[in-house]
Each structure stands twice: as C-alpha cells, then as structure tokens.
Length: 485
Length: 141
Image (cartoon, rainbow over all chains, first blue to last red; front, side, top):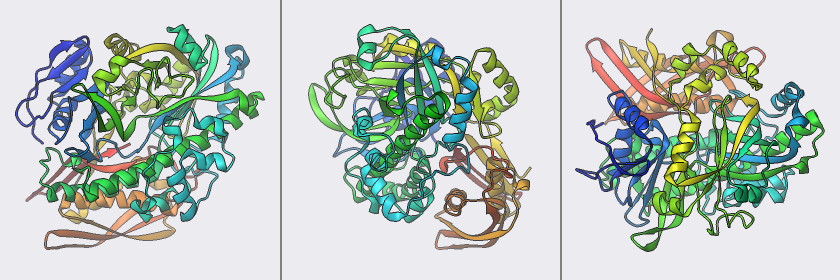
C-alpha cells in the first residue's frame, strides 16, 4: 500500500479536506473536529491508516464530489469505517470493501408504550428473558431451519418473508429502509456455500458489536421531530444491531475473488488489495450488486425475526402485548444502493457505498415513511452499553453535502486486544451495575472488548455531526439492559 | 508463538510464521480457531476434508481461513486442530488440502469467544526468507 503524509485543511464547519492531488479523482473529506484531526494524523503513521484508506477511495474511477468520512471514522479494510463513496453509474465502480462482509448490517429501533417505572426493578428478569429468547453469540442457531428453496425466498423477499411466517406484522415493513426488501436480488448470484452457511442462522444476533439494548428516552432536542417519531421523555425504546450473518460474510468472501480478477481484467488501478472493484456495468459488477441485494434482504429478514423474539421476551418478562412494541425505524450502515442525488446542479443516479455510515435523507424524500417525511428520516446511532445512543434526523444540508449520509456509531478508539487488557469483564459489569445498567453476554471477552472506554466519546461525535448541520439531534437514549453476543 | 494477533482499532490482524508454508498456513488456522473457541474444550470426533486455492500464497492463506469459517457454519462444528495434507503450485495457482478435526457445537462444553466474519485482504502480507514464511491478514470481527 502506498503511504504518505497528508495535511487536512479546514474547509467548513467541522469539515476538513485532503485536496485532490496525484491519483486522487476527488478530495478526501472528513467531518470531524481538531481533536479528531490530531487523532487521525497520529494514527496515520501506524500500521493501519483510516486517512490512507479514504485517499485510496478518492482514487477510484467514477467517484463523485468527494470520498467522505464521518466523525466516527476509524480504520477498516479497504474503505475506512464511517466512509462513503458515490459513483457515476456508467463510469464508476462497485467495491466489496465499500459494503463490508456484514452486508446490510444495521439498526432497528422499537418504541414501546412502557415507561421507566414499568421496567424499574425488573431489569434482571428482562435481561434473562432476552438472553433466553434471542439466540446470540458464536455457535448459536436460530429456531428456523431453512432449506435452499426457503433461503432463496428469504433472499428475494427480505423482511416480508419473516412476516409471512408470523414473525412480526405487515405494519413493521413500512418503517424499514426500502420497506425491508431491495429489488434486483438474484439468488443465483449467491453461492451454495453462502446459502448452506445460513440455513441455521436466520434469526440470530451474532457476536462482536451486535446487541439488543433496552433504553429510555433521556432528553428530547427537537419536539416536532420527536412527536413525528412517537417519542416522549421517559419512554422505553429498544435498539437492535445485527446484519446478514454468515450468508453476507460468504458473499463478501466469494466476490472479493471475483472482483480481484475483474480489477485486472478492466485495468482498474488498485492501491490496496482489499479495495478491488469492478465497473458497475460489467458482468462481474452486476453479479456482485445482485448478490449484495440478496444479502441485504437476508439481513432485513434476520432483524424482522429478531424483532418478534424481542417482543416475545418483553411479553414473557413484563406481560407487554406484542402490539405495544412498534417499529420506529430500521436503517442499514453497510450498503451499496442506487440513489438520486444532486451533483453540480443536476439530479443524477449514483451508486452510493456506505461502509459504517447510515443513510440520512432530509425532509421530503419519497423514500421516507409518510409519517416522518416532513421532518426527515430517523437516523439511528448506537452508542455503547454504558453510554447514550441517539435518534437524529436527516437534513437538506446533509443531502447536499454527504449524499444524505451520516455516522453510524461512536466509532472504536481502542483495539479489542487493548480493551481486553484494560477492562476486565467483572469490572465493566460492576461499573454498569453502578450506572443502573444490566448486562448479559455470551462470549467470554465480549464485555471487555465492547467496554464503553474502547469507543470514542459519543457525545462529542454527535455534537460534531449536529454542529456540521448534516443531521440534527432529536432524542438521546440511555441504556437500561444490554444483551451482547 | 507461531501465530499472533496484531493490534487494529476495530478488528484484529492474524500473523503466522513457520519454517515451511505448510506450517505457517496450519498455524494461522490454529490462531483463527483459538480466537473463536478454546480448542482444548473441543473433542476430535469428526474429520472434515477441506481445499483452499489462491493465485499466490497470500490469497491461499485468506482462502484457507475463510474455508475453515464456512465449514464451521455448514456443519455446525467447532474444530480442535488442522493437518495440512498437500500443498501444490502449478502455473501460479496454489492449492492446499487439509483435514480439520472437531465436533458438533455444544455450547454447554465449548468455551466460545469471538466470532470471526471473514478473513480479508486488508493488510495482507507475505514474506519468504531463509528463516521461513510469514503470513498476515486482517480478520473482520
């Protein structure tokens, strides 16, 4: 990989650019603050550099306006996490690294009719029931056993497949990005290996940073948007974070090889091997796109099944009727999609990659559910088990600046190994208990690796994004119960 | 240790060394297995034949790690160890065959740790010196 030293120039409020020089087709643009700039340039000399990764994205053919990164930027593989790249449909490329191996990983937020007093004193029971109902952690399997015919239906139908089996209701579908089903999925573009890996995994949470968290609304910042989203102070909400499980991982693995060959075939200059790509209109590019759409539908189905299991856990623990737990919204942060955006005064179809970045459409866009359209799309940002999460809203400014994209989380600040050393699990659990947060986890190091101190300060990251104008704060959520994989 | 985990802000690097490429490949797999589950808690009641390919030793390393992950999910098993059987190179195409020993997942006995989504080409490094082989790649957790 080519490594060099970069200077970040301040070009706007919380906006910094590396100008397009050399092989860069567009600037590399990061929304952060002075501290973020210092961190990024310090990390640049290290083994893995998020800045270098963003510059590499800026060099890809057909990229438009800028290679973008949000305040939660940190090193990934190929693309930085928090990275966005929008490409011209004829001149541009599609990249495995721009989506990641956990295709359509995302967050669903559920709002309930419960308040803090309904849960007070019952946190342990709720945590135990979530632990019992939601398959989580390495080696767990779902209650569904799907053969290949059924897997193909999942890949075509997405969340509606799960609803058809009785997992949740049709009302959920209207509040999922793309209604829980992306067009253009082709099960034949997905390998048998990928399908076989998934046969036991629909309806499982996974591990790592995936979680189910019971939260309460701590503060409302935007009354009008909060009213549209159905949020009130003290209300219990639930956040679910997971993706397409093994099927998505295998699609990424399979197409990494396909696109590596395609990069050579079409003479695409590749600055990092993980950043291999294919022209969007090439047979290889089209096949990968069809497979990603299928993988995305699998993730939609997975979160739909898990939503049902969460409702069961609430009913079991607190007697909450399932209809009292409504889908507020679901949004993905590992995606590639065709969208219409304005560039140089003209509306264009662009292929937008978001790797660890969330779609954040402003008011009026037809893709937003009617109930929310006048205030903008809900943007769901998960924090850590010990800190706040946020519900934000998309803005017109974000549409113009970032192709309607925003951050997806706090962003890791510390490696998993370092976190394991610094934060013994018992110490973390005890600290969480002091804060009134009940934690359950499967993996022996899950709690240490996901300790709040391993992440950037969510409040600061959110303030940057709010201050930039790309998104606006609607509500802050605080954790009560957290289930980790 | 013939394999070691490397610092990365979000994921983890897996580096493996060996006097021969076969040894480095096998130890890389052992590192992957140890990251997921304590191998000493996994019995060797079943054997699974696997094949991995690549257009260079780095791609072969990544493919072998991904084949292990796929075999785990498809058969719902954890592994205790790997034995490399053959390693061939013909016209720039590398191919390795191996046997994975393990058993059906039993969460009451197996001490699980981190799931690994995939081995990636991120940070891929291969070196071959008179001291032996070094293989490195980034794992997506």
